[in-house]
Length: 211
Image (cartoon, rainbow, N blue to C red; front, side, top):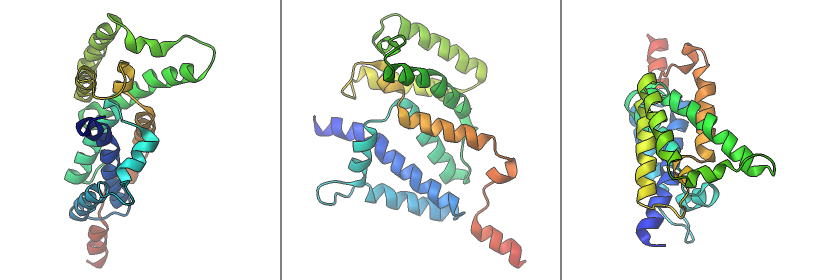
């Protein structure tokens, strides 16, 4: 594996670390400036090797390369956190993408792990079915006003055409178990009352109380 290929495969785990750092900072109601500092610190620390391995390498050893679903969810969520302090779950139709990840990949992994049922994983090698399915999903993205779905399909296609990972199955580029976990968290979080989702930095609470 070349250095470039290794870097591409580890970008997803590195982004996962950075987004997790921002989420932890938001959990403690830190200011957006502090959240940005935490994200930058995690981004740097995640690349520093200790005994030959970095935190990014450790995450990669567990998750492997992340698909386009995880990359889009993490990137939009991180940008929203740093910009507004909010989760970004409702930006660009991200919830619609989360639903698609669950609807598509839960059956794929369920049938793949079971001895019974159809071999749906082979659809990732299909010739005409993939473009046809992509057109259907793009029409759904247009109907649902969810550009995140179009971004997901475009990124997955680019990674697939560039042969970025050690796989020729399109499903490996479109999704992964981490994306399912992120999607489930987003859907659960979307069901919380609005006052529970509202981001208020701890410093703002302190100023309100003191006044």
